[in-house]
Length: 495
Image (cartoon, rainbow, N blue to C red):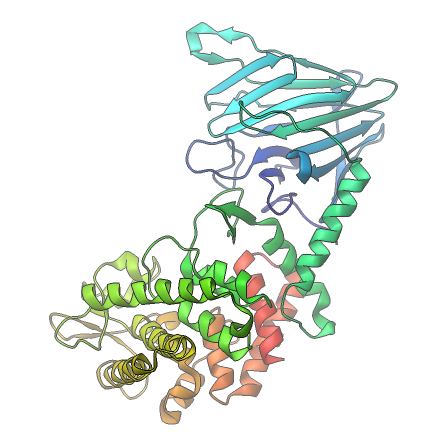
């Protein structure tokens, strides 16, 4: 698979190393650790990146590149450099033939610390620390301290050929950790990464063979943007720029996996109390029969996570009607929710109430599974009460709207919010779902709404929407990690 490196870069699941393309050049960076780290924080080249230069006769020379999921090859008229992630050594391996290599910080404004050691050259920037070591060839590095600038000189790492070749190792290691032994060749590392990517693809839900090319592109974004955070492998929107965990997006990602334990890790990975979007993803585990394979511990993780969310929203975001939920602040509904807050906050909203109905349905299923039969009725009654309040208060006969909690004034809601009740599927009365379905365009982004549309009986419309999305991805590429996960899940469930 041919990969372009402008947005997500070349990397590997679990590795912080990333090679990204900007301004027709390749740059070496680390995945994000938060503010002020060795990373790229926007769509333009920023401080903390090292520009990759192929050198011949002391001059930087033009090159082209070809990247797959396992190997990056940079080619010039004089020679080439191959790059691969060595997961066992926590290192990026760079092998050159016919050319030399320069890694140039381009006068970074970010505070740096540079140091020559017996093991190689160290470049530290914010939260990132590279140890460069030459396995073949000679390494030169200036670690001169410029006292009046209170930092080292901008790092430039040069590696020259030995017998027409060089090999550079860029370790991602803390200062107090021993350097691991290099035991594999570059080709062995590439083959191992290719096998790991293939295994990852096979762990995803099956999709029609005619869409294998789109599936592979979507799977790569999910694979390369995996990251271990707090002991759990999560999937990030773009690990080069952010390590933020979003409950809605992680729930979407969970839909693409056939392993219940892996899906559960994603559903429960978001650290904060948020609208209970996890419920739709949790219900999917029951629908696909994955709960039977879950360890008991994982079941109770789901139960605790969802219960905590429902309790928090019930305690803090209900008023006179205990079965109708509101947003107290704009940010709770998402930054694009402008129409919903035209009359101010707090505001009752159709999307949060949809989430809560699904959450109660999911808790009823969990209660039944764990043998808490009295709680099954409690949660089902709660879901019915919220649905009744949602329809009686926020359905105006043609569409779902928001409503100011204090004044009772009805306000329009953005399409994504107004259509959210379709995620209830067959639970929504037909006279309502039919009107909502008529307003669903092929460009809708919410996979839970599309799946709800399908389950409400609008199969052909859902198939048309999913097919249009897959065709667009085939023509233009997959541009978003979670859109890619949604495509895989939708193709598996709808087509």
